[in-house]
Image (cartoon, rainbow, N blue to C red):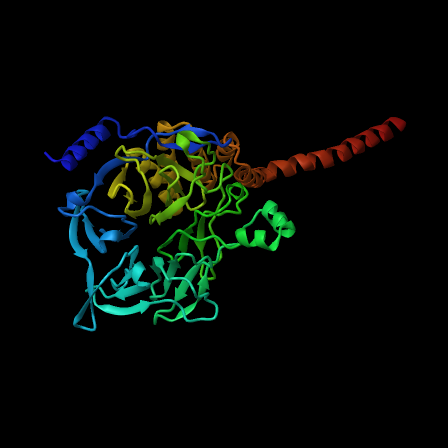
Length: 491
């Protein structure tokens, strides 16, 4: 029995014994920003290497992943190849083909040099491949025939003098390409469908600290030349969601800017390149870990290398600092965090890319040359179910699902808030207020109280009017009776 089959058997038996707990390293944050242990949302399904696909050469510096339906494309950078993998219903992953060349001009066969990323257009099956060391992004049709290249811009807005090294690429349904290139800190290079460069997209804000700024004012010219310029940060990766918005992550920022929301390590960019990521959570911004020390010799905050977005708008980012995965809903609430650095299966040495097929997550480890697969537990499926039912307006179903979540984890703040929102939509305002008050959700409590007060007034308006009428009319009646009695006595 090979190692892969043995791992599947062990994890399956373990899941049957306890569908909620896998490794026990999953956590969330409470209202005070303190870590709360949680039942595992995901369990380890498999860890795969080149040998599992009957490849003679190990993965060397793999750096990119993309999923199109049940097909997963793995970019094996230093081997100058791309693996097309098929993920089957029985959760087995098999090799379909190796893509290491393409047809050009009908006769010439070209190869890649240090490719780092791939994007597949779901409309026509065309490929966009960041052929990094060849200084281009090549577009191929579904049969690997050359269509066009996106190359270094010949434009006044583009600063020349550096080697053009495109490393990441996404494209929209119209065939417009958005490219991230090494040492280009003005955001994405945007190319129209015909390959013409049309400008920069989603440039990050300039960041600096006042200490450096003051020092530059008083330093000599030679000292200033040795100091870093105040330049925008670079994006590290991107994902195009089903609505055409670009999710981008950056790992270059000052850690002091994280809690003030200046760093914005995760962004959702609209057509104008503006960040429209929703952040309604009061317990913490979508920045990964809210606390960081020097455990294990790691002092950095979370620094994201890639992000993927599920169909239910839950987005999952992978952190290279501590090898953790952070899942957030579309309002910026943390659903779960798990993973870690290490050589154990299910942990990582240098996670570089993440994709999803349905709810299942695939994480590429550059240093290990491995692909790790996670599948949700029953508890994780309940969280997704509650989120999705609420989104489609099934508030009864969402409330029932959140109740099931609470049975398994009484410390899950989002379940209380989610249940409260479901009650609110069902016009059960008083019950919703109790849950919002319990979890200190002030905005939601205020909204529920406003509707509760309005509903109470509407239901009791008749009684209120009668009371007011009594209060106003009775004194006049009493006064009239007393006056009449006095007049009778005077006769």
